[in-house]
Each structure stands twice: as C-alpha cells, then as structure tokens.
Image 1 (cartoon, rainbow, N blue to C red):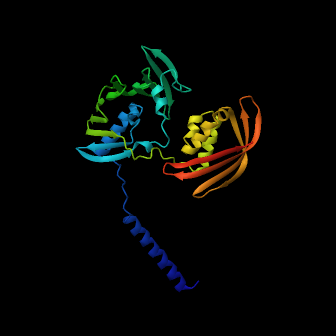
Image 2 (cartoon, one colour; image 1 turned 180 degrees about the vertical axis):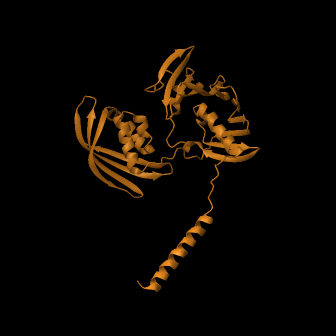
Image 3 (cartoon, rainbow, N blue to C red; image 1 turned 135 degrees about the horizontal axis):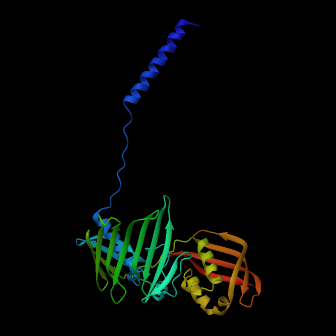
Length: 325
C-alpha cells in the first residue's frame, strides 16, 4: 500500500479525534426553560372567573360587557355575548334544579337535608385513587366540592372548596383548603365578594378586582362562528328534534316570521334524513338537498329542501328556506 496514502489516513484519524475531544470538552450550553408564573393581575382575573363560574355565570345574563378594574385601572374588557363558544340558554340555567340535573353515569347520588350529594371516583397510575364529593343546593349551586387523594390504601390529602351564598344564590365567600394526612403544611385561601348594581368587588390574597357588568345598546349580540354549511346542518338537526326555538336562532327575522306562519308543519316533523344535494358558497350561499322527512304519524315523505343563507354581523343566517314536496 502507498506510504503517502497511509500517512494521510493516520492524519485524518488524528484530526477527527481532536475534533471529538474538543466537542466533548466544550458541549453546547443547555437551554433552561423557566416555568411560567402568572402575575397578580392574572391571578385576580382568574379569581373573578372562578366567582362567576360558581354563580353559573348568571351575572352575565342580559349584560353585554365585563370590565375588570384593578387599582382603579381597566385591566381587561370582555364581550359577554361571545365569552363562550356557544350561546348560553339562560332560562334553562335559571330553571335547573336537582331533579332536572343531568346525572353522571358512574356517580352515586343521595339526598340529605335539602341537598343532593354526588360521589364519584377516579383512578390513576401508581395506585392513586380520588374520591370526589359534590354537594348541591336545591337549585344546583355547588355548596361543597371535596376531592380526597389516596395512594394505595393510604390517605394522602383532601382538597376542598366551600361556597357560601346570599339570598339570590350569588356566592359571597369561597373557602379553598388543602389538608394533608400529617396535618402539616395545611393551606387555606379565602375569596370574598360584595355585590352592587352591576358590580362585583372580589377580594383574595392577591388583592382586589372590581368587575363591572354593563349593557351596550350597540352590541350585535352572540356572533355565530359556524360556517354556512354548519348553520344549515344545525337548523336541520334542531327541526328534527322539534326544537323550533333553537332552529330560529340560525335564521334572519324574515325567516323566523316564515317559520311562525307555518308552525304546525314544522312541529309535525320528528326526523329528517339527508339524501345528498348541491351546495354553492360565496358572499351568499345556496344549499339544495334531498330529504326524507318522518312525521308524527310515522309517515315518511321525500322532498327537496332549498336554503338561501346570508352573512350578517352576527354570523351566517338562513334568510329563506323552502321544502318542495
């Protein structure tokens, strides 16, 4: 073998080992990512959300805007009509009680001292078991939420939230506790709430936040985020479920009047099956579908359904609809 060639090979191996040694002696610096820690203002805003959630968000009913103020300065404004991804049915929430409450499939229920007690269990890895108890008043507001942790058969800790309400079912005090099996390092935090006309003043260990709820006559209300296609589908589903009032939510005023003028026909529908069709979309949308409708007398009928939809400030709406029988 050529001696010159062998020298080149040895030189290459030597240089490679030097590069590897240098790389090992000077490793790339590790990037340390810091855990995000919310500010006191963010914590106060989260506390306000917790208060309104405990009130089943009924503070938002008939209001359009939430203004959060900290130290007299506006921290945040929220459009309450679009605070949720769907339109809240406030009347249904107000009427809810322990008899209409949707029971959880695996939970156990008992009734005691005018309350409903719900008990549930969760199982996780490493033999962690959670026993969850929720106590509701007759109007389904939560009086107590308690979560006990067990590791195997050994009790570890209890996390609990105790809510106190005024005579209008508005929470005025929230007590949050963590109690450990060894009784050491137990924690307690208290949130207090005072209400005035359209104002909730919320105080916690992080300070005070003033929440003002106002009406805005210029508000366009709930803005549907559904596409034209989805709007027609939701309308059809509501009709098939005999939820006429829900179906109207997807319509313009013109179309609502048209439904009301032929209400008996719509109330007689109990099922709709789609058989395909044609759809065109743009600034306006047209949907032409073949349907099979089942009526209350169990008779079925094939027909043609034609939608005309327009885009408004509050989303796509059905402006006209015909069923050609």
